[in-house]
Image (cartoon, rainbow, N blue to C red; front, top):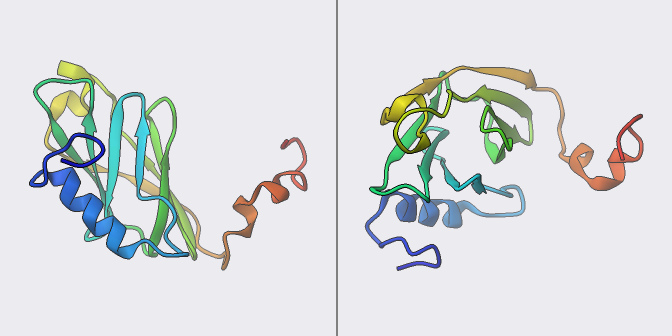
Length: 144
């Protein structure tokens, strides 16, 4: 068992091992927990495997961006209302729309196992992540 209590043969454990293998200075965050939901990035197809940690029995759902972002994803962030996921990379930013959390146990799209999600490319022009640093926020009007 790992620190989350997952068995070695689980989907999330295997993805966690993949993410750990590619963690580097350029790859920042490939695992996130929001509102009892654990999100794990799958570098093979840019999908995200999600499970509600407070639900029994465990339901694994795969959120698949269609098509995959045209850049290497170095991190992702899901907002607190579970409606959007931002894919961030050294050469792009994409915003994926998440389906409604409904149905048994609050699963996405009534608990479907695989869900195709649409996304919008927000920017494919920047070359560094400097604008994400806290020091940059003071230079943006209205941002603290």
